[in-house]
Image (tube, rainbow, N blue to C red; front, top):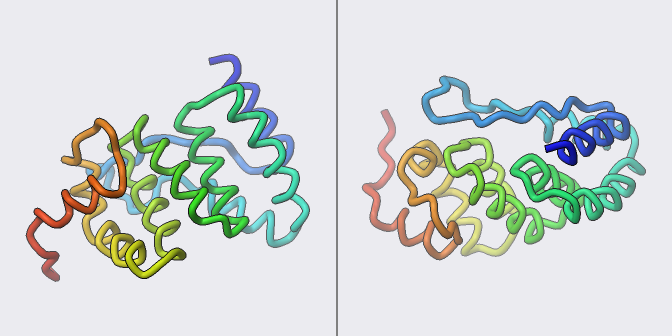
Length: 160
């Protein structure tokens, strides 16, 4: 736990972005609970070298800690660096630790959207079912193939 606190402090010192990261569940009533990605994107837009620095630091942070925060942060950094397949892997790992977090389901979908056509379709399906995924997807062994299989068994999305 001390390691995670140090990582969050280092992240805050480096980026000037709050490391507040909570589980945003389907029943929370908000679409997005975590704003780290948005705040980080703004900082990097103004200070492009920050992405390079964070890309170096995240390797060390991951070697010390594999919490959902650090994995999601690695996903955000990879995503902002346009390394979408890498971001996908980090978001999947973060979901293993926090499968009820709808923000992580959306983050996974956005990383998939920037890849091939098959993954774009999966991203679309996840974005229409992220709340159901967070509420009922089996929590063990979260992989794309299992997500696709689960989604294929669900009734089609209907507009309210």
